[in-house]
Length: 64
Image 1 (tube, one colour):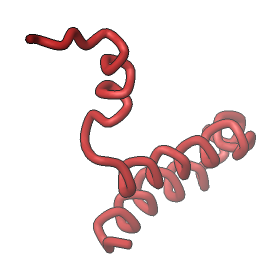
Image 2 (spheres, helix red, strand yellow):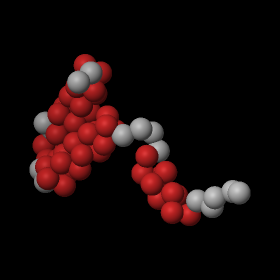
Image 3 (cartoon, one colour):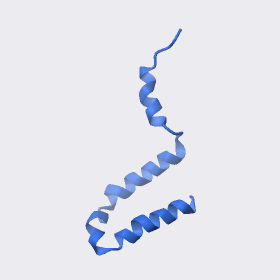
């Protein structure tokens, strides 16, 4: 994992969720953290626009 990602997560998420005014939004961790982890894994393991390519593949017309 890159230190830039860790630093960005720390400054954006952790430091904002420490403030009591943000607790209502930050508290349901399962609503935002788990999907974000899935997005990160998908970002690191798939090529760019992989899901778009999969969606367009059935519509592809073969040129003869």
